[in-house]
Image 1 (spheres, rainbow, N blue to C red):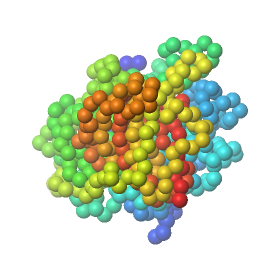
Image 2: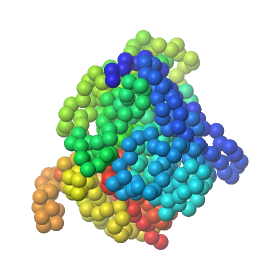
Image 3: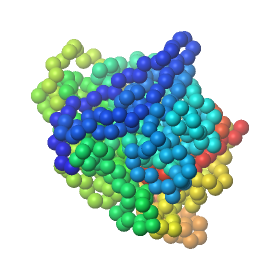
Length: 511
Ligand code: C2O
Ligand code: CU
């Protein structure tokens, strides 16, 4: 569909109000429902799934250390909006079609509240998955100020539930952040960037079959999803009216598969102030931002003295990333437009600080465990490529059992031809380096032979991370300390089509 660009104003998700709040805890209830919402001026209303009647869901704003309790309530219909492949693990015939479980991405959370893929529940908690243990989740919010997001994480249909709309922001604030005098309030804007496709009647389109259809199946999972329209905060190619001053933008790639490489067509710098898990040490002036699915970057954009200008945020990330087909610069090559048309409502006293927070580097010498984990693939019985972690199915016995408080280095050896954004629950990590290696030798003899120099993380990645891009033919090393909770978590590729089939594994932190 060919939709006009920059005709709808960017919506800013509403801030969610707690049902109850006192000095000791805050309680929210959040309903998931199906409803119709206008995603573009020229498109009939789209049936979506969302939280509290909104897609994307409302934004949580919590203080670091605040004890937050959330009851996620499934009030969705019994029938799914999108085509389900019942051959995918956890989605077989017999399990209820519409299941949900919500994960707070990037948060360090007790295992019972982490949204384990098999802790799903249906409408009214009538049916629950084998790992379900409680209706009201508890978030301790030990993290410093950061941009998190919540989204569905159910086994087998995460890609469909998130595509239908089950995602929203969760912002953690703290005192240090306030002292920095960053742009705030109406000048602090979260942007969830997604790609979608629509049918002329306005409905969401998601393929029932891959390009090379699987004849034996009515519906088959696809290896990746790429939409032909860019949706920001639930509007297709929106515009945003701004004042000639500084703004803080929290960029989130909430897409199923698509990577973005974002720039401003004014060529101006973006001042990066945060990575996935919070503020970085010093602001980082960059021309472009690369975002794999689930990655976040916060930037300050300065529109001072740009009165009257229209600035387009563009995307030139090819697919497959990084060296596939160039994107169409007239469609998904555009993201949104900033229009510097609002009068200055007051002096801009916010700053781009010269120093933000200390960033103690984790040293490899402090690690007591080194794990070599291969990203692999195989063919299934229908001739489809299945992406795997370490050649293991989801159901295979748990092999990653880090000890509480232990620092580990994970070598992510990408033996596939795809790029995979790898995400770990519970912890944040630091990227140590990336290094090319001899994939064939590793496959045949299990010998890790480097063929290139170690490359440090990109400037954009020098901070606390929870998702890292693992490129093909490279070893990506990350370092993290496991805790403060013990129990069952997952790590996975955040390309949702890969995560569902079946690039996800449990890990268990042991006392
Ligand atoms: Cu954003 Cu395990 O997910
Ligand atoms: Cu992947």
